[in-house]
Every structure is written in structure tokens, then in C-alpha cells.
Amino acid sequence: MIQYAGWLGGPEIILIVIVVLLLFGGKKIPELAKGLGKGIKEFRSATEDSDLAKDIKDVASEVNNLKKDAEKLDPRNITKSSASKK
Image 1 (cartoon, one colour):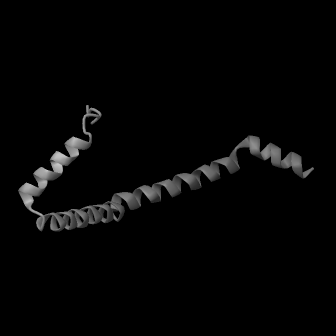
Image 2: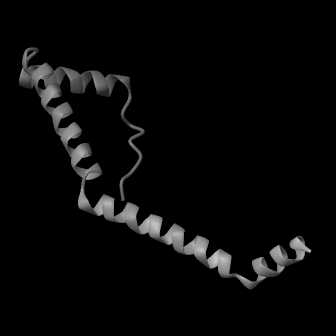
Image 3: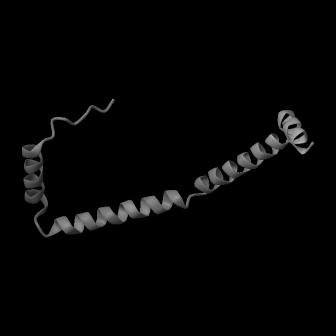
């Protein structure tokens, strides 16, 4: 189980930034951030455009259509509508 990262405060973040600057240098960090951003964008578009997501939307619309049809056939709704017509 993932624990809450409550130990990560201001001094720890500063230390991490310093270590990253020492490892990669000031010129490489924007390139790394740009590559990370592109990767996240591609991942999002791939998951949104996947066949599974389309199939789930299709199934959800079919379920909603079946639910509406079942409500029309419900005898309780038929008696209410016929009583209101009189």
C-alpha cells in the first residue's frame, strides 16, 4: 500500500531540485520536461482513442436504450398513464 508522503516538505524538495540540476544540468531539464509532456499527451490520446473506450461508450448507450424500453413495458407505468388519460 502506498503511504502518504507527508515527509516531503520544503527542504526535501529543494534537495531534490539540486540533485536533479547536478545530474542533468540546466540545459537538459527543459528538454526532459518537454519529452515528458509529449509522452503524457500521447498516452492520453491513445487511451481516449482506444477501441475499448469506444466499446464501453457503445455498451453504455445500449444499456440506456434497453433501460428506457424496459420502463415503457413496466406495468406500473402503464396503469399510471392509462389512469391519467381518463
